[in-house]
Image (cartoon, rainbow, N blue to C red; front, side, top):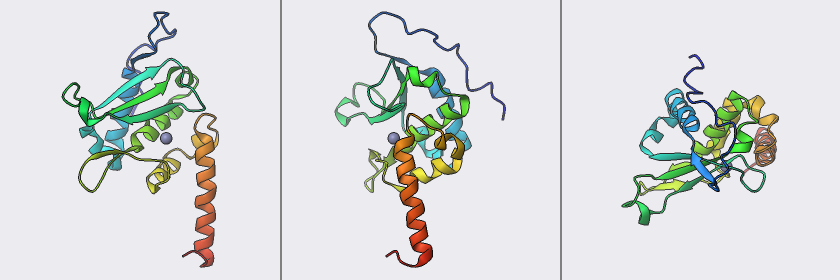
Length: 168
Ligand SMILES: [Zn+2]
């Protein structure tokens, strides 16, 4: 698969000085559509009605987040999730790093046993797929890396324990 589908729009090179903190992120949406098509475990998210936006600069050491739209707004907007990406951070990332950030945020979307959409936390095994997909990106990550380095260390430690037969 070639690259052209990813950067469909000219990148906003400057954030307009109009006081708006959020803007639609069509290039993020394009990458998400591509990832959903490429990854079998992501196919089902085409039903998740996700809205993608940039935030000029997010607080904290993060490149993005994923929020579930509360049910009380469903009659107002036909969106179940909002994925917000730090615009400043985004423009410091290469294409593979951008793909990884989008993959990560998509991984937050889940469904519970009642079939209701949920926002998943980091402490579940689904995120292992991220290391499999983007091993090199993750090791060099400065925005999202801390959480994963820690989790990866715990995972490796857990596997060693299992290999030694000491885990329950
Ligand atoms: Zn996350």
